[in-house]
Length: 261
Image 1 (cartoon, rainbow, N blue to C red):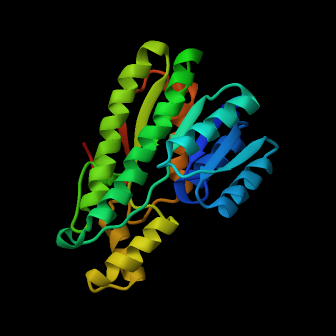
Image 2 (image 1 turned 90 degrees about the vertical axis):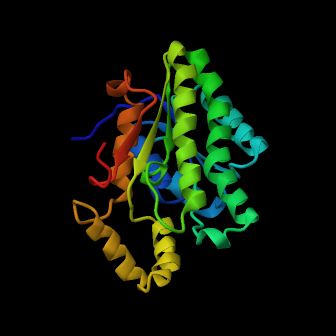
């Protein structure tokens, strides 16, 4: 059954060039939304926007460094100029750079925090006043199961994703009186380019090939597999829909049962 929950609505997606961001952009387009795609990778971001247009909707592509307030502001402003509203922000841009704790340089720490946490803060800060003025809308921040648990060689990543959960709760409190919501989605291991890059880096640290590392992560999951990006995008879309109007400030696990709490 095809859903059409977002006809005449507008979604902004950061990290839209690949992975969960791309899957989310496509999901909103498939359900009728106009989509603004933001990513630093301009070529792949335009490919996502073009794929959104194949569903018969308008889509814009903005090259955007989420660590730069000017870039976020320009993209949000251009989106408002084009469509006069924003109904959903999906803050998905993120990286992974795990290293054993003694080897994490300050530059490595700062770059990951800048993208994974400050980038989410800046996008939330730019969109929240628009949702408040409209009296409606949703922010969905992509955290991770690493925001609730951790493992070796992930100090900066886990710290950033825990920070996203804390930020989400605070934003939710400010939006709630204005009829808008903010939630975090916490994916488990998902078959994205980022996770494949993690496998290539972390697998050898554990004496495993990248393929064996991915299989081990699948075996760790009660469902004995990793997620596909579209499965995460489905939960994102639900949280932006009318069915989720009374859900806010939550950090929702989508991890095949890895964390049950």
